[in-house]
Image 1 (cartoon, rainbow, N blue to C red):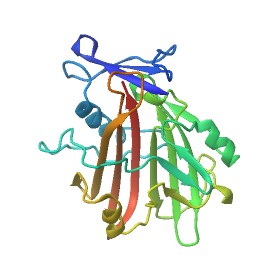
Image 2 (spheres, rainbow, N blue to C red; image 1 turned 60 degrees about the horizontal axis):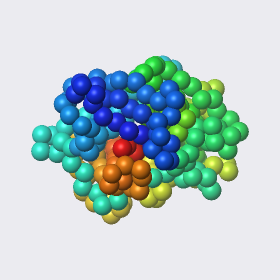
Image 3 (tube, helix red, strand yellow; image 1 turned 120 degrees about the vertical axis):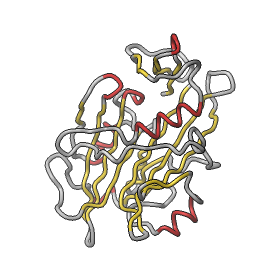
Length: 253
C-alpha cells in the first residue's frame, strides 16, 4: 500500500490510498487542513509526520501522548540520516514491518489482544497494545495504524518503560514466542546513549530530553521519480538510557 498526498486548492492535504500500480482505492481519504500552499513536498511531509507521531490522545490505555514537537527554525523539514532509522519491530522471529504488516497479522501471531479504534478522519487511530513483563522491568508497546495506514497497516509504533504494574485486559502479556523485542536496528528501550549514537549518529535535534532522527528518500513506484518515503524515530532519554520511543513511516506519491 502506498499513498498520494497533495493540496487541492492549496488549503487541504488530501490523502489517497493507492494500489501497487498507482490506482486509487475506494474510500481512500479525506481532506485534512494543513495551511500551506502548493504541491505536497518532502519537507512538509517530514514536518507532518513528526507532528503526527506525538499528537494522539486516546482513552483508557490507548497510545500515550508525548510532548508536542516545536521545530527549531533551522531544522524544519530537514532529514539527515542516510537510511531509515527503523523499518520494523522485531518480535522474536516475527517482524512487524511499517506499511507492510497488518494489525490483524500481529494479533493472530500473538493469539491475544484486541484492535481498538478512536476518532475519525485525520484523527482516527487503530491500535494493538501489549505488555512485556520482564524480570527487571515492564515494557508496554502500541502498534498503530492511522488514516494513512487505512486502519490496517502498521504506520506507527510507541513504546515505554512502565514504573510498575503489569498486563491488563486492554494490554495483555506478549507470549514468549514474540520475545525479545527490539527495533530492527537492535536498539530498544533501555539502550544506552552511546549505543544510540553508534547506530544513528547525532540526532537531527534534541528537545526536552527527546532525540529526533529522520530519513527521507525514494523507493520504486508508479510516480514520476518513484515514491517519496519518510521515516522518523523519536527517543526519550533519561540518565543516559532510552525510556520511551515513537517511530513512524509514510510512503507517498
